[in-house]
Amino acid sequence: MALPTDFGLKGRSYRAWLGLAAVVVAGCSSTPPKPAPAAGPQFQQDDSGFTVLEDSRVAPAVRADFDTAIRLLQQKQYDEGIALLLKVTQSAPEVSTPQIDLGIAYSRVNDLQKAEASLKRAVEINPRQPVAYNELGMVYRRKGEFAAARASYEKALAVYPGFHFARLNLAILCDVYLADLTCALDNYVAYQQAVPDDKQAAMWIADLRARTSR
Image 1 (tube, rainbow, N blue to C red):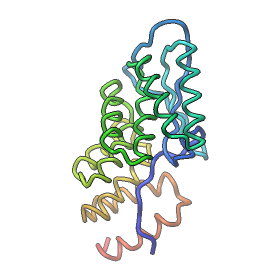
Image 2 (image 1 turned 90 degrees about the horizontal axis):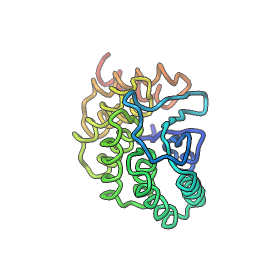
Image 3 (image 1 turned 180 degrees about the vertical axis):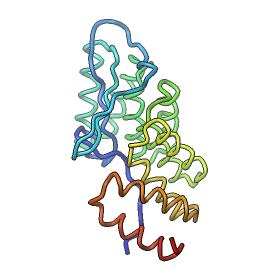
Image 4 (image 1 turned 60 degrees about the horizontal axis):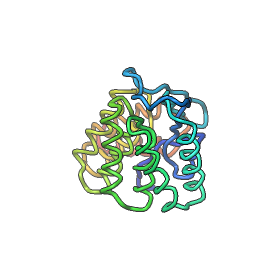
């Protein structure tokens, strides 16, 4: 049986190239950037995954730089993409989405310290950003900081309980790294309810039930 491994958010936008997030900045104008609304980002879900829309006001040139950075990352031109995202974060310091993308890109090139810093900045800007918490959890897991990873996944789910990628990551963390089989089984089951066609998850659930007699 294949060993579980964690997952980022799969979606319709450029994050498909990472197998990670589906986050886009929505809207632009000539007015200065403003923080995202307190209620948090908007979620759209379909069979391809999630899209998270952050309604932020940014200048057209900033949005153009953001879009170019995304294309560079799609083409695996990471250094150029990261450099342009840094420029975007400087121009729009109160928008969380570019910080998330920057954190994901740093993680992709294995610079976990910078990935962590960017994702932490994203949740400082918008504490209701489940994508950032999910990605931050994966960074912590890769660093061996399992308690911090668990807390981050749980924060993602507290913000958006239907965010099944964080649910799966929490289940895997509890199963493989924390040996908390009750946590693992409960979260695998919750994940399977959201994604009933995932046959691999069904195998993991059967294995855990055999081990726990549940």
